[in-house]
Image 1 (cartoon, rainbow, N blue to C red):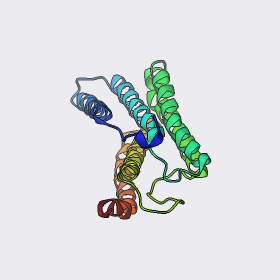
Image 2 (tube, rainbow, N blue to C red):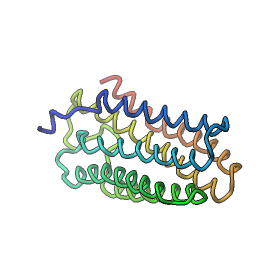
Image 3 (spheres, rainbow, N blue to C red):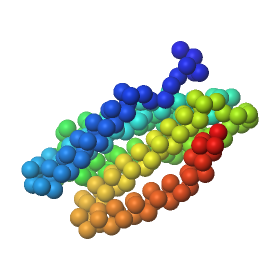
Image 4 (cartoon, rainbow, N blue to C red):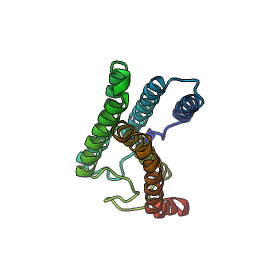
Length: 206
């Protein structure tokens, strides 16, 4: 398969996301209604977040890189995908073994640690979030779709990163800190959306 034959994540990936997020919502609802024990809910939520990371990391290396003439940047994108998969797998393994009172702690440490490494590596290798290229010229339809998918993946990983931070805050300071972090996440996600709005506009006009 050549790089031009690759496609953005299809129905299978989207269906997987829907199932994972639906399961996540059910566990949270079960915990809040008292039907699911707190430790079991935290373990389940952590595992589902890890699986979402793995799904996201699985399709990132398949996306067309805007700068095809830069092998280092392409390798950086592939490493970002593998980094998300490895973080997800490590988190699942850890959550199957850690005691109940340490679930929030290790979910936060492993999740944030893995995402930090992926993020720093992506910065060093110019992980492409926009549709800008060094080769110039107009983007193809497939390239625009891949650029939009790459930005969507950023929003997913950003939300999961905040979830890991909330786990850690819950362990260190309790529920009150987690509630404040929900407000902080809402603000941060809004700023992220505003920052990428021009890029979405360019996709729409192309």
